[in-house]
Length: 185
Image 1: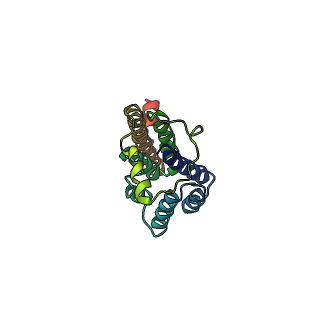
Image 2: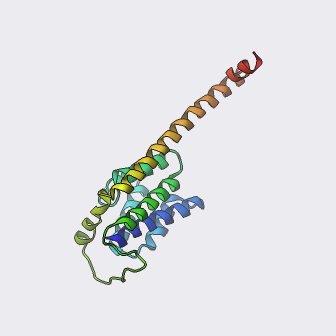
Image 3: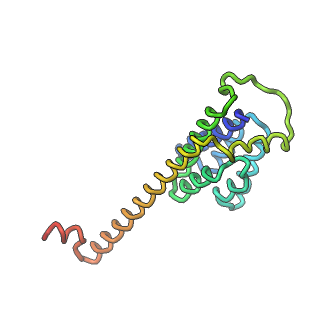
């Protein structure tokens, strides 16, 4: 269970790194999927990439896998996609997943966990990831605070953009901006 959480986090981190390096999203997902040790999880990520390749949006695709991504994770990814900074959304979700994994009661850190060669069917593997739907309360609270902060920043940026647009319109029409009027008075 903890290993799968870390593999999801690793996948998202790798995608974020590649996107930051200007690798196209679908290629980044293809590369990151190859590095996922869990074959069943790798198949899921490849399926997601194929859906996006056929035109489905990122958030819409991720939303189809609620056993892998919480509602809050989806909100963070959606905000990143909407703002053109998907890599930031992926990175934040990866960070949160690592925090959740670290806080799981009774789990050993991944470095100490023995490698398992036990084969599991998809029916055994995917439902066990349901822990992501019910994260540790403290982590969920922290993620909610991060999400709230991101939304506030997004709203502030939207207001600034609107103000800049108004100033640009006024300047192009030859009218002094409101700011200039105030400074001249």
